[in-house]
Length: 509
Image (cartoon, rainbow, N blue to C red; front, side, top):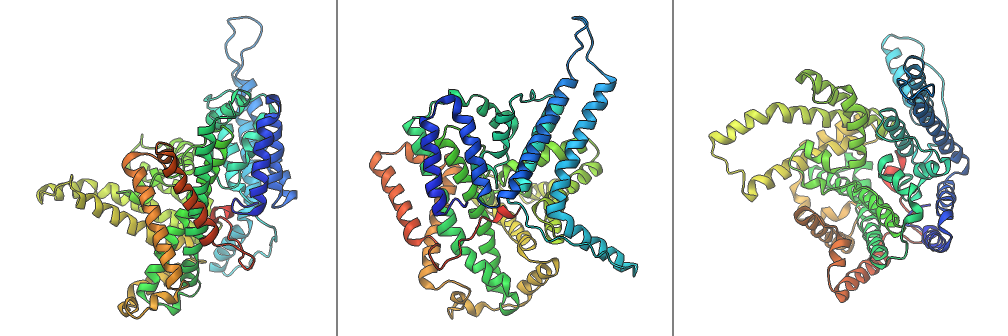
C-alpha cells in the first residue's frame, strides 16, 4: 500500500478515526492490526517474517533483562555473573544470527553466490549453481535494523526490556515508518507506545500540522520526484546515446529524485504519525547544503547514519583510537552501509567512495586550512561557504551514479562518457527537451524545484519546516498554500490510469 495510492487515502482516515474514538486501552491493539494489514497489502505471507523478527528480538530482550537481575537469596547479593553473562551473549548472538540470516537469505544470497563464482573463476574452479527466486520482502532492512537496535539497547543497559509483546510488536511494525523509515530508536518510539493511552488525540493544531506535513511529502513525491525520475530513467537506461550535458542532467536528476523521493516518504510518515500523536525523528536536514561529506552524512538519512554510528562505528572503536584504526572503522562502516542499500557491488563501491572522501577530507583539513591562511581567505563570506557547498554537492552527485547504475561497469562507463563527450550545443538547439520531458513538463519541474529550494532554505536558515512555518502565519495564507499544494498534486502529480505508479525508491532496501 503506497502513500500516494487511493487505497491509502481510504485506509489512513479509517485508521485515524477509529484510533480517535475507540477506548484508549484499545489504541495499541488497533494500531497493531492496522500496521499488519498495511504490511500484508504487499505480500501477506511475508508478515510471518516480521512476526518472527519481532518474537525473537522480544524474547532476547527478556532473556538479557532477566540475566542482569540479582539473586533473591539476600538483599546484598551481587549481580549474577558467569552463567548469565554467557546466557546474555548467547541470546544476543542467536538473535543476530536469526535476523541477519533471514535478511541474508532474501536479500544477499544471490549476490553472495555471484561473488563466490567470480572468485572461483579466477582460479578456474567450477562455479556454484545454487540459485533462489524469491521476492524481496518490502522494508525488511528497515524493520530488521529497528528490532536489532532495540536488542542492542537492552544488552547495553540503555533501556529496560519491554514486557508487553503487543506493544513491542507495534514498535517494530508501526505502519507510518514500517517499510522505509525513519529507523526509530526504542527509547524514543517504544516509550511513546507505552504511553499511548495518555495521548490527547483531538488536538487541532497537531492534526493540521501533521496533515500539512503529509501534503508537502506528497508534493515532493508526486510532483517532483516522479517527474524528474523520467529524466533520470531516460538517461541512465541508455547513456551511450547522450553526451556530457545530457549525462550531467541525468546525474542531477537522480540526485534530486532520490532526495525528494526518500524525503517525501519520511515526511509523509512523520506527518501521519503526528496526526495520531506520535513524534518520529527527522530524517533529513537539507543535506545538499552540506559543506563537507561528513556534514552531508549528519544531514542525510539521519536515522540510518546514526544507527551505523552507534551500533557499528563506535563498537569498532569509533574516534577513540589511532588515526589508522579510525580510518579503518570509517571504511568498514561505509562499506557495510553500501551493502545495506543493495546486493550489488555498485552499492558497496558507493559506500566506499563516501568513506574515502571522508578520509580525504580529514587528511586535507589542516593543509587546506594553512593554505587558506596564507592566501588570507575570508571564511565568513557567502562565496566561501557557497563554494564548499557546490564542491560537496558535486562529489555527492557523482557518487550517486554508482548508486543508480545497474552495474559497476555501467557506472564507470557513465562517468567516463560524461567527461569525454562534450556537446554544449544541446543547450541551444532544444536537445535538452529530448531526455524525457517536453517544454511544458520541464517548466512545471523548474517551478516545483524553486518551491523545494524555498522550503529547504527555510529550514537551513531558521530550522523550521513548512508545516510549522504555516501554522505561525495567518489563516488565509496557511490555507492558500495548502490549497495550492493540493491542486498541484491533483493537476500536476504523476499518476493516473495509464501511469504505473512509481514506488518509493527505498522500498527496495
